Image (cartoon, rainbow, N blue to C red):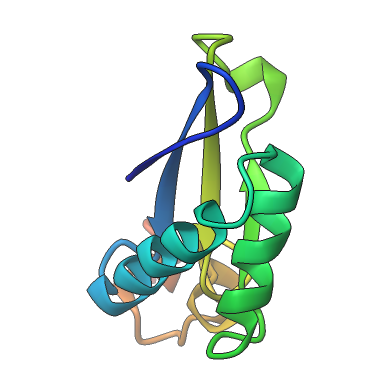
Length: 110
């Protein structure tokens, strides 16, 4: 989703997890609500975070680092429902040993 900022700048917002369409919809609604009040990027992001925290207390909205930017006239923001791309329970170190990802590729031989 895209939102117009001050001047000609725009921000593209990516919502994670991508498999949660409700969160993406809530991000879009929060952006629309905040955009009616301000176009300042920092104020807009703060307003979106405040709105999202009502339903998603761990939510974060962070700007892309300068190293990842391709076009200076556009900003990219990442909205994380659980504060990160993967919730702590989904991170590899939290997977059960029955999960194929958590198993050794080369189990010990006899």
